[in-house]
Image (cartoon, rainbow, N blue to C red):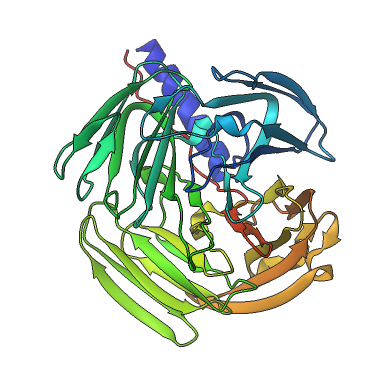
Length: 430
C-alpha cells in the first residue's frame, strides 16, 4: 500500500506541474532515438540538441561508434553527426536505438537523408511521455518503427489490412505480429502498399514509435521520406490548426481514426467538409496550401499535413491542447536548406512572444487569422537561419503552437517544435 500511495502522489505532482504549463513534451532528461529507412540509402544522420541551461549529455547505444559525452551550451546547442549505418535496415529487429540522457531537460530532434533527393526530420518525444498503445499515421508506402526503453518489452501489432513480411515470416490480414524487444532494440515494419493503415500497437512497457511513409514521390525523380515521432493514443487531441506553407500550391490532409466511429471536419477559405469515419478508417482531402485551416473531430484523431513542394514532407499537426509556452530548438544543418517557423497563437496573447529576444513581428513574412470557437488565432510565418533559436512568452499560462519546416531544390522536412503532453501513468502494485 505504501508504494501505491507514493506512486499516486508522484503522478499527482506530475499532473499538477503539467497543468501549470511547466512540463513540455519536447523537454526531458531521457530520450531514445532511432532513424527509420527511406527508399534510398541515407548518407547522413544527425541529432540536434537544445537546452535552456548548460548541461552534460550522455549518448550510448549497443550499436558501435555512438557512445559519447557532450557538454551542451545553452546559447548554441549541439549537433551530433552519426554514421549512416545507424539507419534501420529491413523488416526486422536491430540494436540501433540511441539513448540520450542529460542532467537538465533538453529538446532533441533527428534529421537524415542524402545529398540529392531524400530527407526528413522529427521531434524526439522524451521517454517520460511515451505510452503502451499507439495508432499508426500511415497509408501508401507504410513505415512503422518501434524502440524499447526496457528489457522484455512485448509489442503486438494488429489491425493491418493485408499481408506484411517481418523477419522472413508472412502475416496476413487478421494476424497479430508479436515480438520481444530488449532495451535499446528497434523493430521496423515497411510495406509498399497501404497495408499498415489502421494498425494499432500494444506493448506491456512504454515504447517510442515513428510512423509515416518511407517514400512519397510527386515525380519519378524525387523520393522524400515522410515520418514523424508520434504520441501515444492517450495523448491524441481533437482540435487543430493547419498552417499555410511557402513554396507550394496545395496540400493533403489525412485524418487517421483511432478505433471508434468519428466525425471529422475541415474549415477554411473555400473549404467546409465533413466525413464520418469508420473505426479503423482514414480520410484525405486536398486544399490550397496558402491558407490556414481548422480541423476538428468529435473524438481524438491523428491529423497529418503533406504540402507538395518539390519534394513533399509529412507534418504531425499538433492539437491546440498540445501547445506549449517556450521552445528552444536547433534546425537541421544540411547546406542550402531554407527554414521557416509557423507560430499559432490567440490574438490576445501574441504581443508578448519573442524570438531570440526580439519581437516576433521583426521577422514576420506572412500573417493569417482564423476564427475558432469565438477566439481569433493568428498564424505567423517567419524565416529563420540555420542554428539554434528560442521562442517564448513571458506569461507561463500562455500557450502557442510552433512548427518548423524547410526545403531546398531537392528535399524538405517538417515537424512540431514541441508537444505539451501528459506524463505516462503507471499502475504500481502494492
